[in-house]
Length: 477
Ligand code: NAD
Image (cartoon, rainbow, N blue to C red; front, side):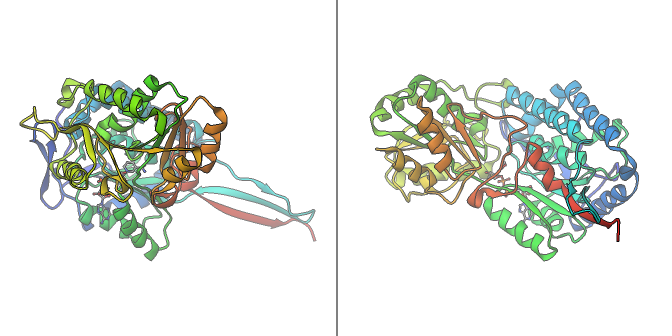
């Protein structure tokens, strides 16, 4: 593996910023590298480079050629997947096997949208015999992408691939905790001969580089993935220049279990839904809502399952890596303490005491959770499951919807009527029946309520990165 790239990538060149900031290996607490710190000036330069590419070289690349280039990104990423996966594991702490899966999904985003690049077209609009009306779907221009640390390169590729496929250029601001794979990705664009300015990366702090990018008058759209609080700030900044925002925000997603389901299978799905990536998925199924009669047998199985997760440094590729940072570790353990203080009963879990270094928390289950407790209301973003129970289907849906979030929801039952009635009633952008994280590249993803606006993934995402021009011609008088 070559050393991690630590510069700022603007217009196909590596430049310096205003000093550096450290990125840390969360498994060992060791500093991996000092990364150049971008601010307003670098964001300005990156947006200018992206604008020039959009007006110039990139606009001359015809859609089928654009498709070939994007397929090229996928192949190159596959060829170097191990190198990228190791860097991701080092920076984000996730088990190597998960980082490998992340790289495979990054390549899949590029394949999916490469296939769409020459199929983005408008409609003809009936106007009667004297007019011809049609629409053209044009790229929006310079797209900005602010991403979080939980799936660092995955969150870049999810927005970047459709943006480039539609003919836009991009400025990416990775999370300060995990900037390394987004930077390394630049090597692929250089190697494949992409025009300067198509892909730009400005690492740095949210309050500096992130804020400067969201406030920049010359960006044409913003894709923000992160917390609700920051999302609101980004939406306010975008309003100043009337820019569209895709906001992919947090969640407090329910997993509803009916007593007629196969409880062994459910225990493994519920656990996967909350513990994967150490609970650091926006759509983690953090609230178990179980039918009264299934509660005891399911909890027994869940506690057994929780004991089976092997925890350790990402490079050892066990089941559960550390949380991403010391700060986040403090946040998650703070929620665990608050659950105990507020009277919930911790059946298993808490801080993983066996490690004297690294930010490890064990799979944690809280029973006796009451409405209004902080662990019941707020997104913890760690491997912490809360348990509540219900008496009938109406109550289950009401509890599932009793949250300001609406990102995902799962239901487990053998009764198709119950499953589809729940899917209809639940206010969530993504409903999964009998399997957590079911869905693929083509499945649109996004939030109801405060979980966000707009949709990523699927052909729906192309709407974020195109604008419709209507043309009407008078052909006869
Ligand atoms: P965060 O909001 O703290 O940071 C996200 C990004 O925003 C980072 O790059 C950060 O540097 C930047 N940022 C911070 N302050 C900013 C500002 N004032 N202006 C502009 N940018 C700023 O979120 P996080 O802690 O990195 O990520 C965790 C959150 O992300 C969770 O809430 C999780 O649910 C959410 N998330 C959502 C999705 C989704 O698809 N809905 C996916 C992954 C993560």
